[in-house]
Length: 442
Image 1 (cartoon, one colour):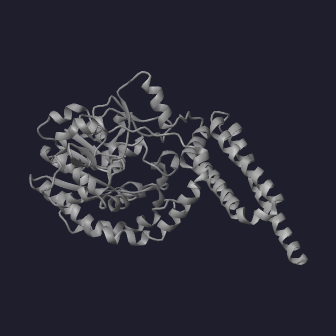
Image 2 (cartoon, rainbow, N blue to C red):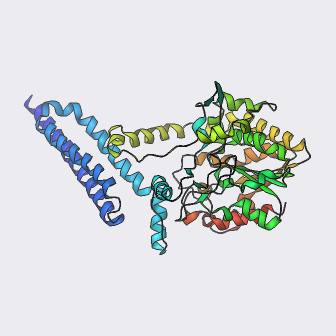
Image 3 (tube, rainbow, N blue to C red):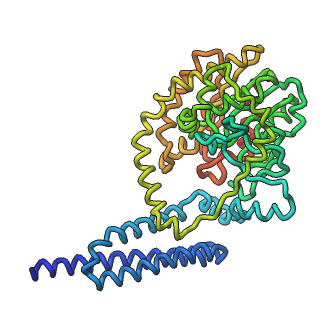
């Protein structure tokens, strides 16, 4: 018994010393980041987190001397330590922080406010303001209007300012038109348009000014009537719904459908879980969303909240997300093939709509950052190897393929230059211009 107790005492000391050392290192890193990296600007954020670690150190001492209970909480404290380190690692390696460091290195000013801070600052001068949302918030969570369930598929409409994102150092905003798109409102007064763009945030013009997005650049080059149907955070099914509900009646002669390899198929899988959205696979289905436009806009308002650092750590939020990400990675190789049938149907329906008035569909393939950076930790990495599978579905149809990967990006020695600060995210303003110049030739 004495020998066994001696071994346990040694184990207690090792575990106690390891946890104490890990927590002290964690606090040191947090203090360094708070005072030297963020120069005290985020002190309150880090202070709350440091309090948690100090509390855990206290509990560690308490239970160490109460060895009777130590064995029952060792796993809990270990989980806290792992949660802490994962959170610190995530914070230190997050894309936003990388952009800030690169901007600082190049002597550029980088606005470090979050969306809520930007909203509160702009709200002082402009009451007609909103923050861009993804229609995915309504997937399996439909809006009720007079006992009717509808699924909004755009952003809030008629706002002087919609706050979108910041990847270049400056926050990008735009004015939403009467239906929630990134257009000048008078575009809806045209009976017909020449060109329509359909896609996600890359089509909308994520993180650049209105003048710098693809639609605006294409309008300058072509002198045509162009309408932008890009909506951030959408996949192929919602994009089909957008075209049918809002753009089909405009009979655009050319429709450029922008497919982003990074997450469009992933978005499609999620959208297919919604029973209302699935009805769009019936070519005759419509929600007649224009009729509910004012009601949708009045109820389409959400504000982000600041993270509750203490509560999130107590919930092991970072650790749980880390485990879920690992589990999802095992499923990615199966994720493309089980959506090909629906994706193929969506493209066919798109084509039928457009051919019904003698228009033409152009399939624009947009590459993701991790295609050129195989060390990226992005969870969708497996999807980029399915490019040929996607394009082979399109080649057998009467659709023109525009491969931005091969036709533009691959012609550069370093394709990462097409992304802000050469890190994962959206394209630069210069890249959007190049794409507009290229597709104008078709």
